[in-house]
Length: 533
Image (cartoon, rainbow, N blue to C red; front, top):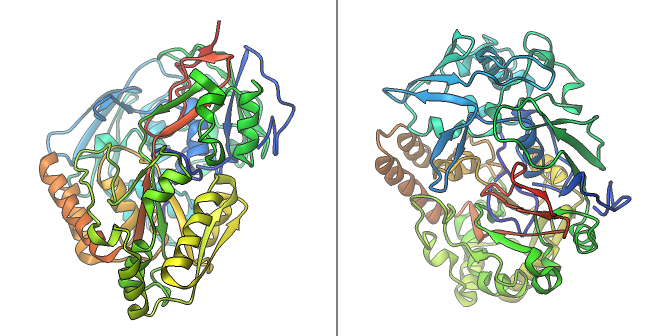
C-alpha cells in the first residue's frame, strides 16, 4: 500500500497527504539562537528521506531542497519544466522526457536519464517496500515488479534513448502524467546511492545525495536537526541563503515560543492555541497564503462498528464544523463539505450534502437506528497540534449522540500511521492530506480506490474505481473532471471519511528573515527566503 503526502499538523493548509514536528534546536528544543548565516525552519521528525519513500510533509520539505523536480507548477497549477527540458506525448501513453544538460549530483556525478530509470525502478520494485511504490503503477511492466517474488526488477515501460532522454510507456493513456512528475517519487538518485544494481546503500538515507539547490551538511541528526548548505554548482535559480537548519520539534507550542524570541526563523504552522494572539504577537511576521490541505476523520470500514455508512453519516451530522473552525481555529481554516480542495479545477461546494450539515436531532436518530457503537474513540498524533479540535469534537459527539467519546493520542504521526497500516484497532482516526500534484485524481485515487496508496480504512467500491480510472484515461481535462466528479458523488453517498476542514498556510517568521513564502504543498520556498538586512 503506498502512502502519499499525509499531513501531521492541524493548521496546515493543504498537500495529503499524506507532515509531522520541538523546542529550540533538537528533540524538545535545543540551544535556541539563530544567526544570519543559518536560517532555521521547524519540521517534525521525518519518517524517511529517500525520495521514493518520502510521503509526509516534513520529509518532503527537506528533500525539496536536496532535489530538483522534473516539473513545478505555475499560478494556475499547470506544470512547467524545471529539471526537464521537455516532456511530450502524442497519445498520452508514450511520453518522451528530455532532461536539461548541466545538472550534477552533489557528489559531482552528471545527472543522466539512467539515474531516473534506476530510481524509478527501485521505487517500483515491491520487495524494496517504498511508500511511493504505487505512483509507478501506470508505467508498463509495473505489475511484474510486484508481489514477494517479482517476475522482473525493471519496468518494461522505461527505455533509455540517450544520456539526456528516456521514454515512458504507460499501460494505458493517462492525461495527467506530466503533472504527476513534480512529485518527489520521480526524483533521480545517483549511482553512489546504490551498493549494487537495484540495492540502495543503508547509509544513503542518512545523507541523501540529490541534484537540487542544497546539499546535506553532515548527516540526519534524528529527533534533533538536519543541516543543509547551498550547492553552488546548481544550474537553476540560486538560493539567497547559504545554510538551512531544519530543526525538529515535538511540540508546536515550543517552536512558537522560539519564533517569538527570534530563536527560530520559520514556523510553517501556527499552533491552534496561539491563533487568536499570533497576529498581534508577530505583527507583519504573521503570514497566510493558499494551501491544499484537507483534514478529515477516517473510519476502519472493515470494523463492524463503522461498516454501516449511516453510522458514519450520523457522526458527520453530529459535528458542528463551523463552530470548531471558529472557536478552535479562529477562522484560519474553513469547513469542508466536499472531498477535494477548493484550489483545484473541478471543485464543487457541499458535495456531501445533508451528511455534512450539522443536524444533531437527525444525527442521533440515524445513529441509534444504524446501531452505532456505544463508545467512539478518535485517535490522533500528539506532534500535530490536534488536541484542541479533537477535544471539541468528542464533546460534541457526547452531547449530540448520547455516547461516550474520547480522544486517544499517539506520540508521533509516524506511530499513528504504523498502527493504521497494520490495522491495529485505533477507532476512528484523524487524517490530513496535502496534494502531491494539482489534480482531482490526487484526492480521489490514493485515498479511496480499492488499492489506493493511502486507503487506510479499507474502503472499496468497484464503480468508484472504474470512474477514477476512466477519468485518468480521458482525452481532455473537461472529460476527466466530469468522471472524477461522478466518483466524488459516490463518496458523498457512502462517506468512508468525514470531511472536516480545508486549510490555508498560517505561518510566522523571525525578524531575521524576509521573503518567506509557502506553497500549496505546505513547503517553505527555500530559494526565495533570505536574511533580513
